[in-house]
Image 1: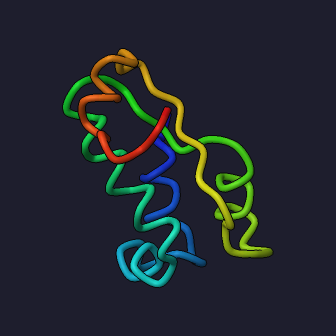
Image 2: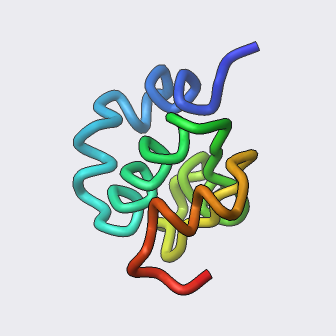
Length: 83
C-alpha cells in the first residue's frame, strides 16, 4: 500500500511535490509541523486538505494533523501556540 506522500509524488498533477508545497504557505507550514512531530511519533495531514490536494479542485485553506505524539511533547515543541 502506498503512503499518501508516495501517491502525491507519483500523481500527474503533482509531479514536483516540493514546489507544490512551497507554493502554498499553509501546506508548507503543515509539512514543517509534520517533520517536527514525526521525530516523536506518527503524524499525518488529515481532513479537507487531503481531499483538496487529491482532487486538485482548490488549494487547501487549512491543515489538520492527527498524531500519536503525547500532548505534553506537542506543548513543549510548540511553546508559542496555545493548545
